[in-house]
Length: 237
Length: 289
Ligand SMILES: Nc1ncnc2c1ncn2[C@@H]1O[C@H](COP(=O)(O)OP(=O)(O)OP(=O)(O)O)[C@@H](O)[C@H]1O
Ligand SMILES: [Mg+2]
Image 1: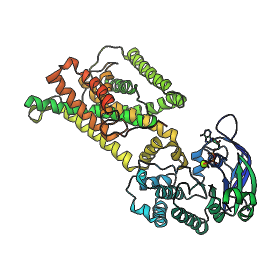
Image 2 (image 1 turned 90 degrees about the vertical axis):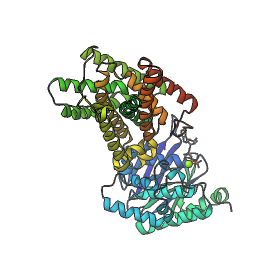
Image 3 (image 1 turned 180 degrees about the vertical axis):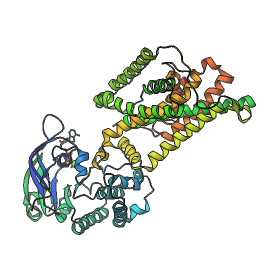
């Protein structure tokens, strides 16, 4: 079966010298893949290269079709929802307006309305705050909003950039539980970038370890979880 | 007392025009963080387009509508052709482009239409109404202003496109990630600003008469209004417009005389910048990213 996302020789950066050096990775259809790595390893850059926010060389295929030459807005229109680092909240707009923006490219008002209720069901706290300015939400609520905004696109692939960053363990567990639900019950594939390796390996089936812009270990999540180097550096046991 | 009331009312009428100009400035400021110095000349040019049509025998309101539509298209063209290439250039370079646009529009208008002052018709009768407190033109201007403000409010508040334009101005990266074509939203902003500016030009031309420099003072008042209300706050800018209009009229009548009225705008601009740079209702811009 064709993977939903496949990158080959992905090389990207911000200036003349690349940050990512010829990465190969894939997300199986309906699956969850995680890319682990320390600060500055290039995780965020990888997601930006996939979603078209920065130019890259190499091949990126979405369900078999090349997307590496597309602008970010066109990648989004193909069904890739990127939850960026820092969450990308439209802070001056209301919670509901943020969600409506997530569905900006959709032309099925009925479906959009249903999905709005669906994400309110997943994150009831957002329903309570639907008229509130998004910038006034707590960090955890903003992360929930960011994920909800992404789901409003009805994506086939979700790109998540460190959703656990800066949040209390309880909130993080809640968010991961919902990510699992979304993946399992709706078949949304996920490419998850994390520093929190134990959480990420718990959700993912495939995993990659990134060091200074290169994939140094690749395998199933179980394999990486058992890898001594990874246990020492990233899992702490 | 009657004279005072009259000054206030006619101040509100010109204030409406300043409010529209201020709103046009705010629209472009929100997207670019720059003041479009060419806004006034764009409006002036639009007004000449209207004059050409009316002079050729087109009835007022069809000419009005055609001018607004044409200005919208011209605004988009200006963004695509002139502003787009300097999108990533340093601030000063963009400001120079704005000023260049100002000079070019002014000279082209002078070249086509000459610098002789022309009269521009008002669609409203000139006689005074409501017991002489206000002229029908002033009342008409107020109505048109209100119409424009309400339309803009509804557009930005309740339509998906309006929402997308606000989003694109606020957070271009996130906007791209939800599929918004940010470049086009900017162009649309220029189109709207030009269209709205055209309305201001056509409303003020019967009062100040039509010549290539007619908008210089108006732009200054509009800028003062935008600053007073908070240059990133549309509602504040509208409020600022009415305040500046009334202040200007009262100062002209009771303080400095009509010749020195423009200093009111300058005093306001300097005053706001020194005492409260974010305006009455503006958010303080801590960083520019
Ligand atoms: N906008 C940028 N301009 C220039 N260089 C950048 C930019 N963003 C990141 N970099 C550089 O690219 C490299 C990889 O950064 P990246 O943000 O992808 O790492 P990361 O793995 O996401 O780190 P973190 O865990 O801290 O988020 C770093 O050396 C960083 O300095
Ligand atoms: Mg990062």
